[in-house]
Image 1: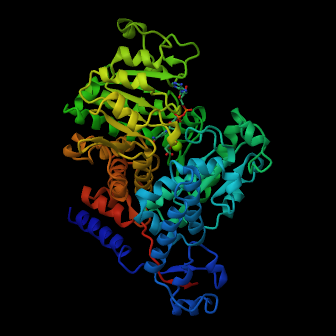
Image 2: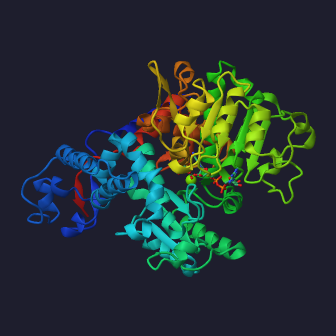
Image 3: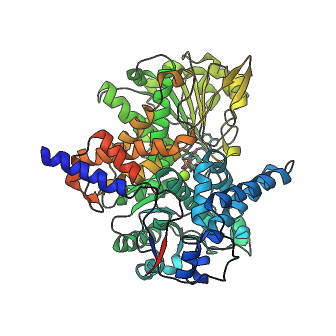
Length: 601
Ligand SMILES: NC(=O)c1ccc[n+]([C@@H]2O[C@H](COP(=O)([O-])OP(=O)(O)OC[C@H]3O[C@@H](n4cnc5c(N)ncnc54)[C@H](O)[C@@H]3O)[C@@H](O)[C@H]2O)c1
Ligand SMILES: O=C(O)C[C@H](O)C(=O)O
Ligand SMILES: [Mg+2]
């Protein structure tokens, strides 16, 4: 007992030592101009004189040393002038201009870049992440100046094991991987989808404090079926149709093996794969490696936390979740992931014989057991005839008819189809059986949202709870009332899932770890906030919520005996941590951008 307490305390002391104000020196293997051209180490005009001497930088910079704070202010001033100078220009022009100025800083000086990102996350997340990242991907071949991350293509078959050693960083902790086949709601963008792993990993650094030297964005280019890109002479990816079947899987297998050969403890997040490959690869690798699929699993946890919040917002006990009528529009990787996790939650609350009231629609309408060639993954949610005949519904019923007849508590969109919750659908939600109907328009980016919040509050009623996947402004309802817009985006969970898995040294990422993440997010909000329709924390608190989620995931890994430890914190030490100690352990392992001393080896 005594040994256990002492061991946990020593872990804390050790981890705290790394989070003191003066950071530990970093070893740099370069000298002179090579350092100035390396964004990991570059401090621009911020190199102190002693360091300029030590690293062969004297004379390569103007003589004045500018402090980190001054550099920060200077960047923010240029950002604000850009905002002023682009006033009145089309949104896409302004967004891309903002993305460019941030990207240039990212290319030059990572420490400053991440500090401005962390301090201004509410304003900058919509630029480096959703929705602007979508626009960046659409225009990637034209915007391309410098590579970021790694590109593995179908032409690299047989070479990946050696290619992985081309990455300059000795240690990699987090990898986000895409094949570009379903980028947000924008479809197949081929190699241009690399913007998504880059944006997700920026969120890992900002929210989870993963050291940017230890992240790796990856594009697996197996071709594209996007005709426009195939015909574009400037398209940067393979100009061939996508590989399919075994040929496709052999490429993913080779990449996954190469990664684990070099960095066996790296956590791999699969992102924006088309549904068939999203499910297949999750099934193929989740028991073997520490990986997860963000669109299926991260989204599910965020949606579940929001759905539990809506039950609280109705003033009902959480167990009433089992009685909620939920219409999900979109039966792809995200929609099915949400329903699977919701079903698990209902089963925990009401027992395995629970009979949830879920209705699932895809582009062919309501999915029933009579559907020809039904996707096996949708089968558990397909309605049997006897379940819907009383409502006068049948196979393929349209969205409006379903909403009118079911009178759902929740209408949740993950269809990728902008505006599909049109005026009549939203008006029909006024007849919902809930005192506080919920509308979740979760598709991204902005134009693909199933509806906008202004229409939702106007047409479905001011008492609704509203969430969207992309950020929108709150709605002014008049009389000093605000219609709160929640951002139901997996960014609230994936950084914590990855961080908790990493710091526990989890062998793999289990359903229990994912449930722990969702429960942690769900319980983060106070009753007062929930009553005001606020389901998720402010993005300004993303580091705090990520620390809590990361620790919850870590504790779940420990409880399931999946945690092997991380660095010099062993499995035994993790087991002996209290809840508070686990949160402190996670927090103290978060990287924070400051200029630390550089030492040449
Ligand atoms: N907010 C978030 O955190 C989050 C997370 C993941 C995905 N998403 C968004 O969800 C959307 C879907 O992602 P996905 O991975 O499930 O895509 P997907 O391609 O796997 O699935 C899309 C589904 O929508 C259905 N659909 C298409 N048109 C429809 C229509 N007119 N009516 C009803 N259903 C229709 C399709 O049949 C399919 O079942 C994308 O826009 C994505 O950006 C958001
Ligand atoms: O990328 C996002 O903003 C969320 C999600 O992963 C998506 O694919 O839309
Ligand atoms: Mg995604």
